[in-house]
Amino acid sequence: MPDWINKVLDNDVAGRLTAFAHAAEMRGDLHPRQLELLHEHRWFRMFIPKSFGGIGLTLPEVVRLEEALAWADGSTAWVATLCGGAGWFIGFVETAIVKEFFTGDRVCIAGSGSATGTAEVVAGGYRISGSWPFASGALHATAFTANCKVHENGHPKLGADGREIVLPFIFKPDEVEVKRTWGATGMIATASHSFSISDITVPVERCFEISPATAKLSDPVYQYPFLQLAEATLAANISGMTVRFLELIADNTSYPKNSRTCNELSSAHQSTVNKLRVFFSASVDQTWKQLIDSGKVEEVALRQVSQYSYELVRACRVSIDVLYALCSLDSGSREGELNRVWRNIDTALSHALFRKRLVAEMPSLSLATSPTPRA
Image (cartoon, rainbow, N blue to C red; front, top):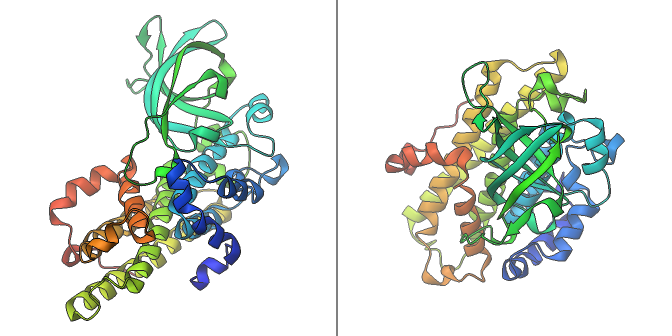
């Protein structure tokens, strides 16, 4: 285990997460032992303040933890990231909603960022209908969040900018129907199924807005912009899995180590990924320091987080494509860790946050065009 992981994740815990990863895939959900570790360490409550039963981590602490968890098992880390990330919404909801949805020992909030539902304005609240995809952790969620397009009198409600208003809502498990639609080749144990809601009415308090200006809690993390928070946490997951992939490549007996070209390729990719990890981490640390010191983050620093998040993800994309292709057929066994880690990364890279840009650049992606890390 790399030294940087030991600083945030106990060796025994990491080993147990890895040990149950294959069994989790076979069951199509996190193994009970993995789930218990997530609850035991309160990782679903990483963004929830200690005063509400969480562990109140800073963003840099969250990023380092998620990268370490992803090194141990990608599916576990992904569920912790997405469901723990939904816990961040505690900073933007009313007090009554905090007590109802964000407290308790087993809190785990799943959800979807897709705006594929409608919320019709009615007396005292909203009438909700819709279907949402990719709710990681859906099978053991204690609540669900979903984005809805707001309608009034049957027509889309527009904001001051002329665009349709889209707002997030929170729901009880018995208000949604989980549909077992998750059939990806990787991240199988995340159980990222879809869910639907059919014509239910919820009070207005179930709706909230996400922006520094609408935060109800004063903790600095709720003043951090959502886009860069999402980019950084997802990039950390892909980075952690890729570090593990590169280690497995080095240990894989089917990998052509006697080939000078292959060795040079492997070393070059490992060097690029590790350098970008350093710059990515530094960019997150810089924005957090600015937030703590001055109460806000400079736009240029936020752009660096976005750029280094993408460049790190891009380097991971190139690395797994090039290096896995050099392995023998033995590495294609779905029971092997190398194959599982490769499939997990490949699936994670399909996330909408990075996919569009990756697809646009795909024809030119190669080691030669991999980003050169900048100080």
